[in-house]
Image 1 (tube, helix red, strand yellow):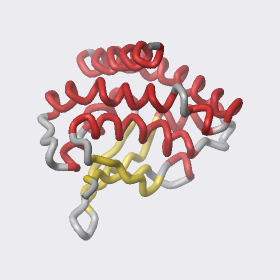
Image 2 (cartoon, one colour):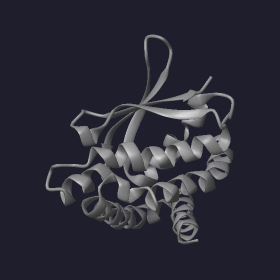
Image 3 (cartoon, rainbow, N blue to C red):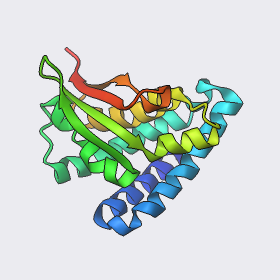
Length: 176
């Protein structure tokens, strides 16, 4: 029950940040608190500590927000890169700067060059970061969003700021 309450609160903040850009700094500060709580769980229990609460909560947040984002962004649920447009919706709210690039074989890749969550992780870890955070927590949220729209969807992580890369790079796909 608590997972659903936390996910719903995160959703309400996201929608408020979308409708009222002046609210975004407050939402980003609340994300700092959330990230700190998730990281403290990691320090105490390792990645396994996320499995009972944080991973399911982020997946639920993804599922809850998916229909709203799909309507607002006119997402075609039959095209993986269209589902990936959730980045264009959420990035300004979360404090992420990014753009789209296309690989030589035509795959759309989201490239995120600046991220307030990553900045906060670096701050609370004294520069050590926490690559598992994005691999587990953020992908749980993003896969939850995409799979709510098309069960075959998944995100592929190519690089992460939290791993010292110059950008996060992710692509969007369907399972066969």
